[in-house]
Length: 358
Image (cartoon, rainbow, N blue to C red; front, side, top):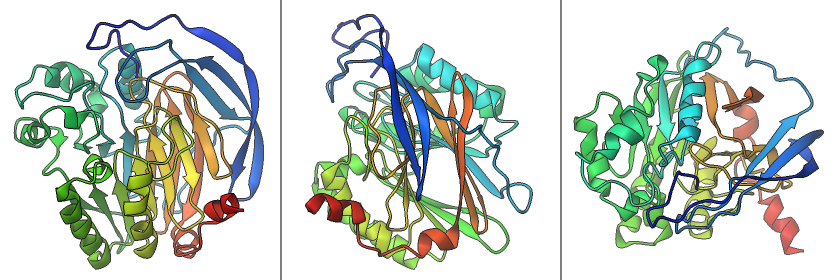
């Protein structure tokens, strides 16, 4: 994680440059050679110690093509980013990029994917960090939209109830509970239902996690939404520093497959990734909101970058497009998917696990 200083006063070392690397970008059967520029950052895992900065950029040689929808524009579009908890120049750059590109990639709300405040969350709904880490950080004119937030592991170090309570004090912050759902229109006769989870409770296997999982499965099973989109801080699949979080994956992945979820959004790994589960749902990691880490590319990788940035998602009835925007380069990747192509694979065996078992 990157910040001017950690809470215990340890300072980061200087940026160091690494060599260019060649990677392969897979795309549901297609491969594209990409160039990757790596600036190495040695970062700790969970304690928040600041190490040297590292940014790994990966960009397809094919030019970026703006999203195109049959109806002309998507009925539903939103941004997704996580790990925004360090107020500072990286977060400022990402927020400015969100505002700057809103004309080409418009959105009606933002999904915050957890670790909203490093290192130890907030102390209360009146904590001054609300002003510095949220209100002023996202001050762009086009950022005057709802921010629908999930909790991360660092938020659990503080007062998580305060993040729920702040919803009553802010015109933009939305967290009606530690886990919750909401529905948005997604085109003619279509809706998208979002399920926002507290995955840190699942990772810790706290007593309340059983209640949360029961709520989640019941809501998924009873939902008649065409698009089911799940949000949690911890990824079920990732090729970043943390990788797949086993307890969260065991708790969630079969439910995602069984009930036809199309998209799982997470942060935790400080990079940008789009992964094909091969089982129906797509895993989107957008955790490069205020610091970055390098990652590796896997057989399931459709896109990855360790530059600061955010994701954009557009939905129009049967169409879903995901784009990634780096704060310095702008939009670098967009890919369209059809609902029937994702759902048709739901319930398929996990080919990546099967391959690794041999």
